[in-house]
Amino acid sequence: MADIRAPEGWPLQEAEISRTAGIILFALTLFTPGEANDPAQEKNAFRLLARIHAEVREFGKRPGEDFIRQDFFIGGEDDDDTNKDIHVGILIRSEGDGETMSIQVTWLERLKADSKVKNARETKTLTCRVRRDDVRILRSDFPPDRVGKLAEDILKAVLDKKRLMKR
Image (cartoon, rainbow, N blue to C red):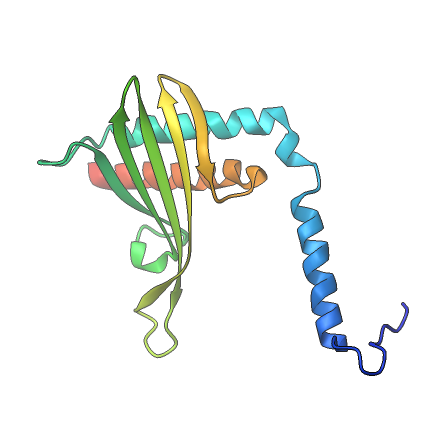
């Protein structure tokens, strides 16, 4: 491997060159065609989003609200939500001849001073329009190739909550 060094007096140092090269390589992987263009994977993601919508609708509206709102947690192998570090909020509201489903995913990180306390580290949103079984993504902070896996994890969290509520 070639030894890359910044010329004398050049503003970038070696660490900055390495970091810049890493950022460029990472950015290239984001825009490289691959799974995101797989029609079967895309169809599966939309099917999973439609199932999430149907499952969350079954929770129904809370008294005094004209929308459906539910919270879920992803992560951890047990049923204790305090052991999970990803919060998912789903809001479904009627609009015209369909519904809009907003999914907000927040990654939590535990405080070093008190591991029982978590702060939001990052939040991303996916909003889609649902008419019968037709799902269209209106806005997404997620790369297209991550929506399917995300939807799988969310659906599992929804089904787990429904199972726990039946107990």
